[in-house]
Image 1 (cartoon, rainbow, N blue to C red):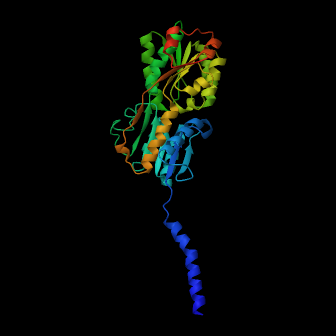
Image 2 (cartoon, rainbow, N blue to C red; image 1 turned 120 degrees about the horizontal axis):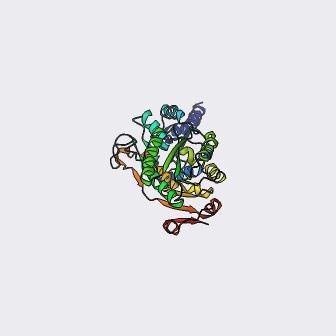
Image 3 (cartoon, one colour; image 1 turned 30 degrees about the horizontal axis):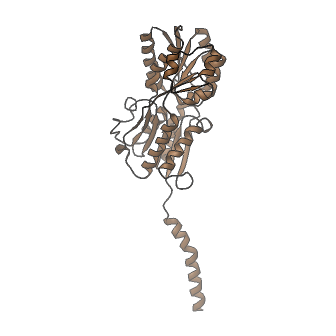
Length: 327
């Protein structure tokens, strides 16, 4: 009788032991990823983010979980999505673009945040300074909105006879739209040309915008820095060509899709760095101790095939300054 009791107790302990061991295993950290685009339009940036995470020692579904929240191009949804991640109790929040970073910052003062923005994060009110961010937020910034005037200059150099240009901004990203409009208007005045500022809040607005460009007889278009436009680079490149409106944008993807010119930094490298910072925050480093990383290299890329389709001869001086020429 005693022997049977002993065996039963040992068996019960053997069944119970794994459950206790499992309960003692630390829970995987959870990243809350807040995006104002959609996963299908964000694939290359997301791959770069994951590469950065891997560099920091984290692989999704292996030793870290990721909760994605996508605004699908509707920035008005961002505050609620950010609040949802805070209620979820995520370990770190990673954001993609200025509107998402501002929404996350407004949602929490305690959960660490790693951002990528293409504007001055100090001017945007995200951090106190680049070297000493302060608070619970830090991240990566690239030359983006600040290069708007340079893009207008390059476009005018390519089409010197043009006197009317346009800029495309997203009014649901008011900070970006205001900065772009202000700086481009100043640059247009300096160069003695007229600038028309047009707006698009969703991709459904693109046809209206290009119809207005034809009405204005705009000689060229500067596409403002915004995730809405980044996600639709191929569509904007095609519309530019079909409506015979030469355009310039920030990112290389625009050129790959058939766009005429791009001038800016590498968005993939910026998101890789954001992934690295996210990993470092998971490991316990404080955002206030991590200076904002700056990607300051800007590359000029010209698509000669598209220029030929427009009937544009690219000046040799401009070709000589290009970092890459696509033929």
